[in-house]
Length: 297
Image 1 (tube, rainbow, N blue to C red):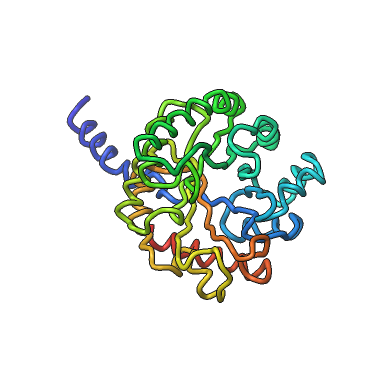
Image 2: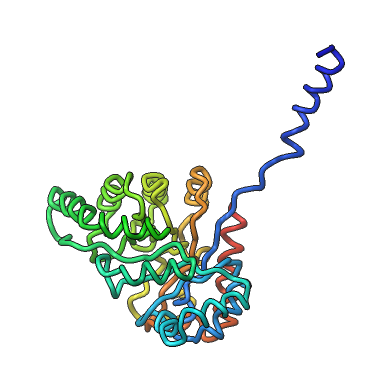
């Protein structure tokens, strides 16, 4: 290579990053059907793309009725509806089944080309820290055959941290993350709502979950969701309405290049109603929250 060719090559290399810069990281939004309460799929599916989501996750009673509707109309009709609206299927939430009775659900999620099932932990949690740690390890051992079946079918069982549950405290969540590190088919659905509203704690837990984080709820505690209250107070569970600073959490997700589904989320009281009176209002509120999160990235 002569001097002129060398200079040309170096110039080309210097220009390459500007010309071939990778697209910026962004959240991969999934829509939880429960945000629309008991509204039928025919009303919810047209809203999915409007919210910025690429797919939908189905919830059963008492939070929604869409999972039961799927059983009623059948897999083929539901798949055709998804295709008509140009959206994907994420998976289901099945607290009603629990973590040990998901065999049929795994097969259904695979059939619909979904990728996850969210459920809770199982085991005594009102125990000493030492016993709780042992109970988390025992739970993980019990989950191994179920995780193996899920992995064989391209599905991940996501254990959500939830109040009054084996996986409730930050420590129990850390132990779970450590114990499932090398177990395919098992992951964590992280719900900030159920954790201390301390950004340092939440960031630490996101990093602790690392590659085992399979679903992230953009959901803060606000004023809670266990009693009736004015909508202006109830919707403080939504990003941008409550007091939680989302920027450090998003930075942590970006640092680990999290590409799993993110659900903008809250619970209304009573369960089974849309978070706002109409589908259009519900969609508009989800869009507002999405724009808030996107503005922070």
